[in-house]
Image 1 (cartoon, rainbow, N blue to C red):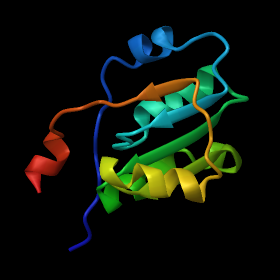
Image 2 (tube, rainbow, N blue to C red):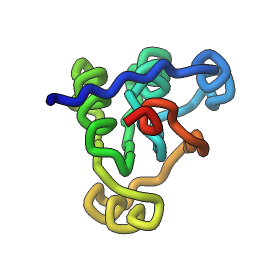
Image 3 (tube, helix red, strand yellow):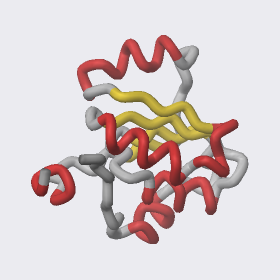
Amino acid sequence: MKMKFEHISVLTQEVVDFAPESTQTILDCTLGGGGHSRCLLENFPDANLYGIDRDALAVKASAERLKTYEKQTKLGQASFSELPEFFAECGEPVFDYILADIGLSSEQLAR
């Protein structure tokens, strides 16, 4: 049985509205299906986005959703405790905007 990650992002406009106008480097600590990241990149098309999720299916779904932006994204399967290693792999970027949607995912609970 092939599993598919399905998730509908909420508050996407609020996430975009809260971002500084000068946003160039974004960290999404909870990629999920990549909905928030995609909205941010649509509104900040020159920005670079780094994103993690501990769920491999979520990272795969995000990579597919963000395919248009693949040259400016770096995604990884990692937990918060693994952020230092992820940053080291990415060249120690400095972020203008950090998003962490802390909470439970109904998609993951359904599995």
